[in-house]
Length: 411
Image (cartoon, rainbow, N blue to C red; front, side, top):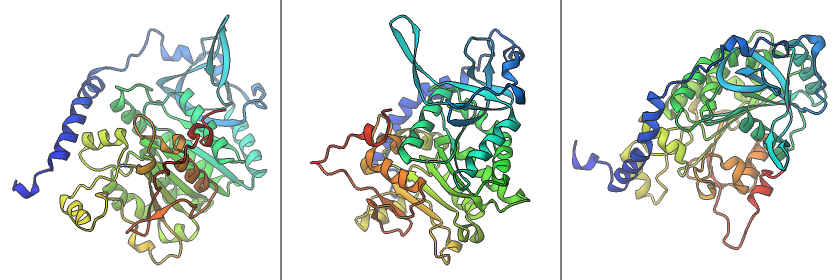
């Protein structure tokens, strides 16, 4: 290795710091097994309420949201719980946003009211809701370290933030909801790809479906992208361009893989002309993706690190930030519509990890809400030297936005 090719001291220090922080995570994540538990999994799902029949459908009037899950349910307790284990089958149901529940006198906790539905009844109810909303539906897929409670809470916030009037669905795969279980989450995410792509195929071919707004966060993008690609190849009764508005928030996806294999398939000329587009939210202050970058060895789509030192040096020489993004598909340049748009939220990053700016930072929340509503070029973005990349500028010093209120984190 020549002197010129050595990493900068700043980069070495940053990597060393994150390597030290990551060591217990990697050790714990790799050697700590997933405990089966003291109860046979078949016993958890034996009660009838775990497997409702069409005439058993509970009143869903107080549960406005839909869910699909491959998590194992615990139907032995008074209130059904969704565990972190893999389920025996995909289940359907309805849920409401977080509510305060008194567990014992003087002590309350927040919980998610939900109930299972017969699958045929679920699809019929969904179709009716979609028909009343011009065929629009929102589908949210969570990322790493999520529980059913946290992903349900985020789904509720997304709907309130965006004002989405059609039905909203969350797909809940068996994330462990634990810091030291990233390798397990990766494994379960890949295990669940078959389930999710079958569900997405059915949703895309539903007669009432006119537009699917598909949102994924973090590791969820690795479940979403190949599944969209699968539907595109195999859909038979309709044009899968109904999966039109794809939003990848902090995607934990290999950038080069996205450029080479995924973007070219999903953003084909025909589908872009039929209004399909992908919006990516990225930040160089995303600590979670910085760690993922170090673990996997190559840049993440949501973390615009320059892998090539020569590219970084060229940007520095031009007085530009050393940030490298996925390239816009060249074949789509002739189409008079943006196929891929990347929004850099670095300057407005908030939170301990900077991994959820779309639900925590006022400027990012406003932009995200506009994209969900179908706005192509929301106000508040600044252009960059790349036509498909925009930045959200820093908040003025004299401005003190109430981030939680603007992002509708508060009920």
